[in-house]
Image (tube, rainbow, N blue to C red; front, side, top):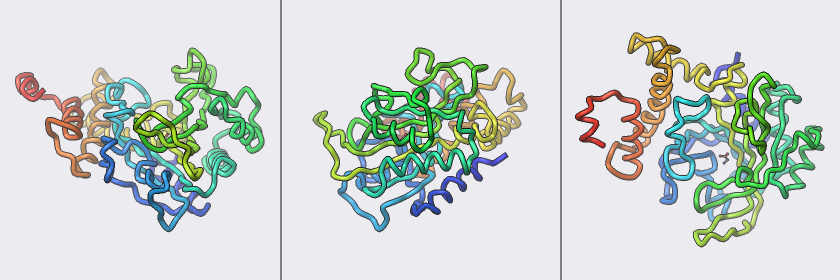
Length: 321
Ligand code: GLY
């Protein structure tokens, strides 16, 4: 069974072999970007490359980016502990093209990695595309041989990815894994899509627009690629689990929490152990990246995360609210 560390290496090595520069994760506090509270996806450190404001000496990159989704447009704080797949802190695996390759290479890259290197059975995979994106649908048909019913057209923002209220954005294609009809849930776009049967594992964004502060959508000068795959989510799949919190890295934190409190990791305190495991990660990485608990902004979000994970006397909790 591959560990999350093995899976991260397989992903980065695959894209390195395919001409991508392996770039370090950027800090959780975005540099020079007051529009974002925390780095919420792999593309944040490359925002100015997509808009053409900045150039570097590479046009293809791959990263394992630390992300926090606990404030702003992407906020998962209140779901943590209760669901199988929400985290405040997670790692996002991604590959990026800055005006280099576009859809006709990004889709085959993803398909090859999933079905060859990760050996995921092809008949378990299905995809969504933005409803007007005939080109992406055609590439999926040709490259993966997917029948029309496994290329689902979605007319909503679920298939138009935005970093935040402003910034680079574009239509996207999402890859889903079908866990089988013994698990409740419907395909993406159906009324039962929130069930656990069909799980999104990878999002490929075709960066071609910029959302402007006045609400308009600018067409970018170059067409680029931004993808995001949650390490914990693909890890659960490749480790034969249905719950991200059962993967090796999360499980070791849950067991440490259970040991420290002499309780059963899967007993009545199960939700608490999961919250502690998740919030320990976001708290540690936020503090390491220079955020301190405070009454406003990023520091306030950090304080909220810490308070959710730490038991404290009621009187003190009231005073610090
Ligand atoms: N930037 C792509 C994603 O977060 O899904």
